[in-house]
Image (tube, rainbow, N blue to C red; front, side, top):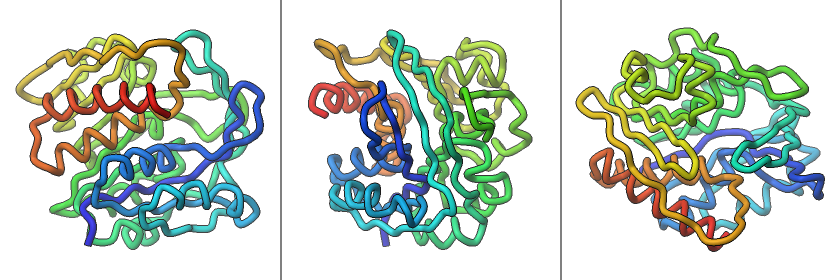
Length: 265
């Protein structure tokens, strides 16, 4: 039995025109979970063609990993302009089916749903993962992003899937896409028990039915590669909540952990 399961596509990323490298929420979640010594297992999908290149770096983190075959490997190309990431979606992996996701989650009670586009984990799959007793953290990027090939596109057509989500993590751009504003007070209307709004170097907001609290970022010296910072934040928050920390304390630990990871990649 493990406490946490991270599910999603491992991606083939081309960053700033360099050689392809493994990426995706499940990859960076695994890196963080391993460094944190979490009781966790990883469920990752990609094509058989790219498995020899993408799976060994994931397995090298030392956590239990199960591979799921996808006809296509999700692929991205991106670069950064200050804190903004400019992305192209070059390929999209297969949707996770309800049966596949439930079997992958196993007996874990805290689930990091590492969706990259809204077709990765359709509403029926997220609903199947959310029986009584499980706590789902979902990154809004995987709900607002369309599966179109080309420049990354987002819209607010996410249906009623948030009813199955206990913890929603989103950034300011995704908040704009969903509710037209990055004002944390407007996110109460989502009716999600816990919302974590990250705003880059300005830190994050923790939004629950009872509070809206700002948690500052922990500064990092020099230039850093921010890829995976959001995924690290999400999974650290999840680890802390699973250990009994309250939301604001979990966010403070997540901010410190992201800073540490950025300083020592």
